[in-house]
Image (cartoon, rainbow, N blue to C red; front, top):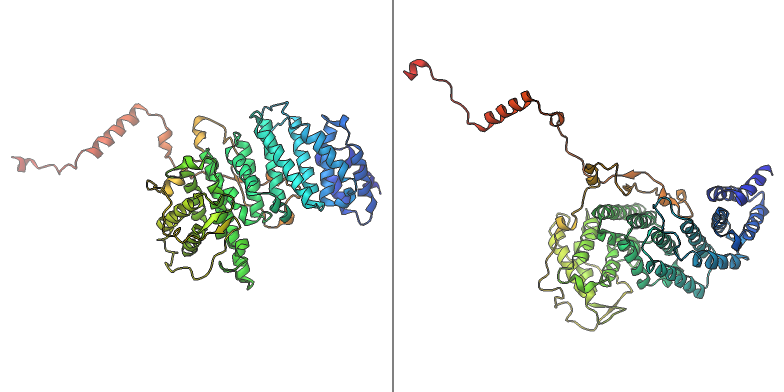
Length: 504
């Protein structure tokens, strides 16, 4: 009873992190004290008052309510309407207007922290309380409306942090099949543009890392891996190199899952109807579809280098040690005979089918792992494509006549992570790529704070060793010896000295 009393006080008056830990401890003792958590939840609701805006106490209250939704949502089910109304009106909408731009990414202003806690609380409620389809549509519209409001505002640290928190919230909601049906490809393209083209490098890195962790742990299904692949288009080549490495790690984890299925006697073939859920090869249709709706697609004519870069990153990872080139031949030929569901008259998907086919055939069709045999089975087609009645699509080449392949070396060109160290800087302005997360999903944080944890690993190439003599300043003796050595090396070999008798 003393412990419960102490935890009760910490859950109502401590800082945000302390409240979270106290509530989790109370949840562990819920069997012996079932009413303790319910009493704390009721007390937390009373702390949601307009007068608390701008105070640290509000941050702790929002964090506490989010933790209650995560561990014991039934205690807040009846009063969830009042909690959601306060969060929408007095937190998200009130702090949507930027009042403080912020000085550094690591020290955000109060409005950013309150906004982030409000988004996390809203997402926890949506994931743990059953929702009707109309409510799902309502909150999806709310989230993307808030995102648009931040994108239209002044570009600063505050708007980037708020947009990043909305991005993370939507990625969490994509775990739910109900929200996956409500979040359309148009919504996903808005996330893609935000992820790749945000002006703040810390925001881009945080969104990419959060997405990568959810793909590695299986919280996010494979079809959304294209959102990670497009990060190879980051204008900062160091970020692009990290994104490429993360794509390879995700594909390797998918391959390991396939091997585990095979060891258990459940082999899944590429023609199996369940293959899109388990085989990384089926990431291609979603990647191709989203690239067809890429912003300023027509301006990429005639070489479409942005699309080529994404295709190279994907095929480099997915064809490694696997004979699947013939499958891609058949998949691309089949996709070419289908139209875009949203824009049936558009030829963008057909152009990209020809470009992807060209890359596969020229770069990966002549490797050792490619057997050259045609794929014997059938392929599964995404719902984003619909079959056409025309039989001429297979014979027509839609790629421009002036089209040229970039090649691997140009597509994978990047700046080493330690390139700026030569200028006397103390380190990289961004974090190095984090190590792969643990496979046990239960070890991860339940509220999505895991993106701040984990060791970091540098992707920089190993430096060449420089002899110690190269750093020693030249002395007159060293210069003379070096010049003599250079002269000896440059001059031809001398013949043996002739004897005086021979000379005579």
